[in-house]
Image 1 (cartoon, rainbow, N blue to C red):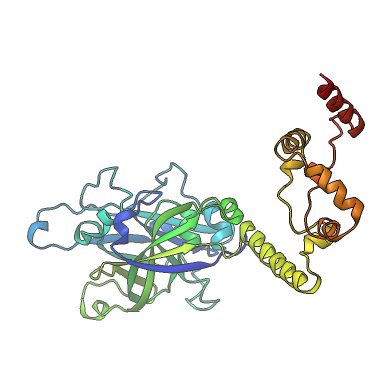
Image 2: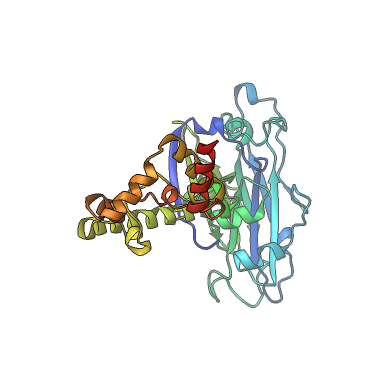
Length: 376
């Protein structure tokens, strides 16, 4: 499909009119490259805890935990093969995916409704606290940072859809380095990717696949890491607390693919160029570009359809009835060679009714038929 431009749109309350292509659910995808002599798999060295708001009417609501999943909502397996090409983790990469359900029960008809997800953040959007112990994920003989620091960092993707490809293509991972404690703020955005690019290329209409993404607006050191005694810290232990920015102003952001060029736009461009050249030729030569190429006269009451045999026979017959002296006048003008012959040769095209169609009798036969009819 090539490179597609995107545009950022903003609108008040627009999310109430959108439905996503997949159910909206919190997913956290972790990607880690294998290290030689590491003694643990990524799934055994990470944990994710939801931190729910608790006040007023929400005191007695249960807090569903985040859980590691082996299959996505569509039934596909969670394997590193999905990530090899698009996230470039290589063949030896490890992947762990957490799913975090909402506190409220969202019916299937509302599970793809951004408005149902956004309007009650205390029921659908917990803070997420990720804890990673890198001790047994790294080579025991190495220290963090002995190699390229990107190789020793965990890539964290925050997702709101079960479609892994959409997550990798539309979001940017946040790196988590060993021994760091950070907090990140995410903005929730509607994303629209072109579903049928060929229709957009033709210039007919656009079909979009709509889903929600989380864009990490910024990260900062977690102030709780130094002020809380039981906070997990250490040279090879990291935490990442994720929170989403509340939609106070309810102005929603939509990032949308679009086409700047299409086949119809190309035809329009060619038509505009042709019109300009025709105008240029009319000024210089008194005729359009096509008129000069095909040696046609500028004025005619007939088109291509009138040159078909059936239409031409009908026009020839009817014009003889309605305008009885028409062909006689044309022959007279042709014979005299005066002004009207010049007009007919250069300006007005009446050949469709002036010439006898091959499927009709010739002039002599036609004249004989007329004389016979008069004698009767």
